[in-house]
Structures are given as structure tokens and as C-alpha cells.
Image 1 (cartoon, rainbow, N blue to C red):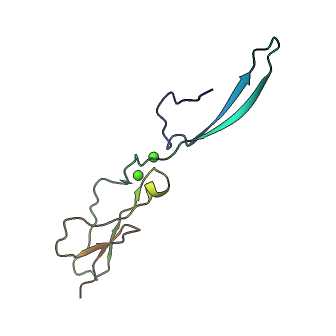
Image 2 (cartoon, rainbow, N blue to C red):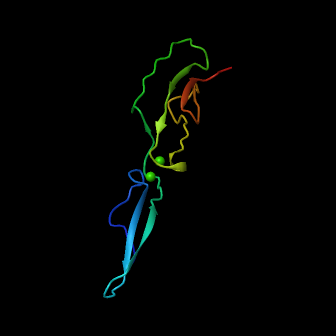
Image 3 (cartoon, rainbow, N blue to C red):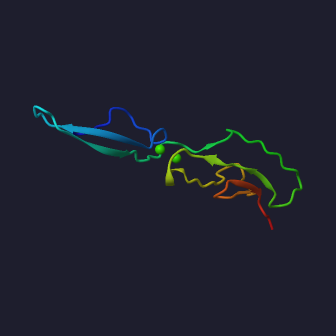
Amino acid sequence: GVIRTHGILDRESQAHYWLRVVACDRGTVPLCSTVEVLVEVEDLNDNVPQTEFPVYEPMVPENSDAGHSVVNLEARDADDSKNNQLTYSIVSGDPQGFFSIDEKSGEFRNRMLL
Ligand SMILES: [Ca+2]
Ligand SMILES: [Ca+2]
């Protein structure tokens, strides 16, 4: 009566399975009963966040005001719950700190320099 997996499950393809199992005795006239089994596929963090494009090339006019919105880098992640919650940060390419990115929305701006 042990149910085992017979292949690799992917929560992003199918999150749960309803199985119907029948148990029968070996009587001359067998008697059977059925039970429903709901198998929930637990999420693992197996998808990386994806942006719409691999490279963005936004244009910014020189002399534009500080705080000018440059681009919105919205990424998506196919996983569930905390495995798809994203934060954004600039890790290189701006040693003078001219740009900032909204950690939650991915919106990129000219930094307000005083
Ligand atoms: Ca993920
Ligand atoms: Ca997953």
C-alpha cells in the first residue's frame, strides 16, 4: 500500500495530484473500498528570476533632473511564495553612485546628489 514517485515531479508544472486508491480483500466475492489521496508537491527554489530582456539599453537625456526614472527592470520567478519574492540592487558599473534602484520594484533612477 506504499505510494512512491515514479518520476521527477515539478511543482511549476503540476502543484498537486488527486489519486484514487482501491483496497480489495481476497474473498470469494471481493469487497473493496476506495480512498482519495491528495499529494501536494512542495516547492523548491529551482527557478532563477528572469527579466523580459537579457540586456536593457535605456536612453537618459544629459542634464536630466536627479530622480529621473531610467528604466523599470521587472523580473519574474516561476517558483512559489518566498522562492519568487525578489529584491533588486546595483552590484557594479556605477562607482560614483549616480544611479539607484528601488529594492522592491526594480525601478532605476538617477540618484539625487546634493
Ligand atoms: Ca526562484
Ligand atoms: Ca520550484
